[in-house]
Length: 54
Image (cartoon, rainbow, N blue to C red; front, side):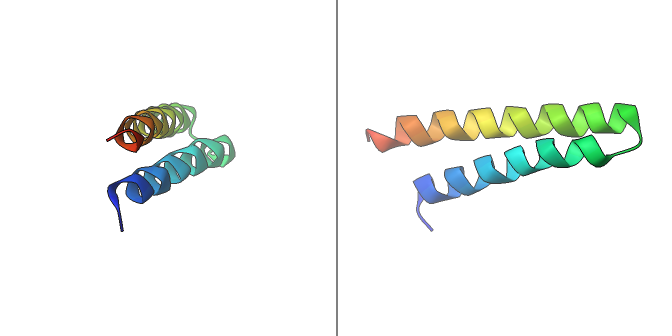
């Protein structure tokens, strides 16, 4: 698995976690999962775009 495809897979996983957080009953846990999912997806996509030019 190349570096770019790993970053894209992590971004997809992060976005999936963010969507999954809407089904959680515990509000504080849902916020944590949502934030972590978006943060990991954003960083992974940023890495994917930067690694594209290398």
